[in-house]
Figure 1 (cartoon, rainbow, N blue to C red):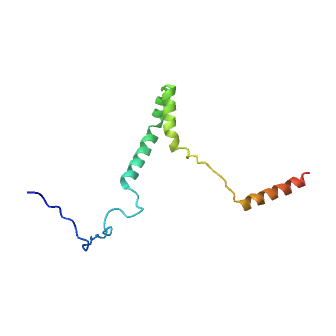
Figure 2: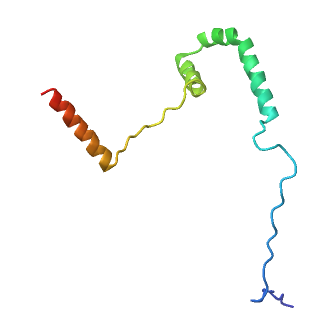
Figure 3: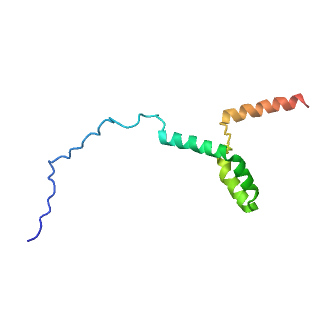
Length: 107
């Protein structure tokens, strides 16, 4: 026996359920406790072993030192972003006029 495929008729409508309101879990903006604890532990661990890290670092090959420094730099230095200036026609005209006046003073 062949199976019949059932298709909805044109007058049937699809019911969409509304999302439920959040009732549990962390509140928005609450820091993750595990992450904070891990950062604190790691900070203490590195601080307590800094002299040993420095001693071991001195024994590494140059390539290994460069690799470690490269990986640590993003945690110390902020990322650089490209800064672009753009002027509209009015601003460009005003700057040009001001420069012309300055040039006249030195002629």
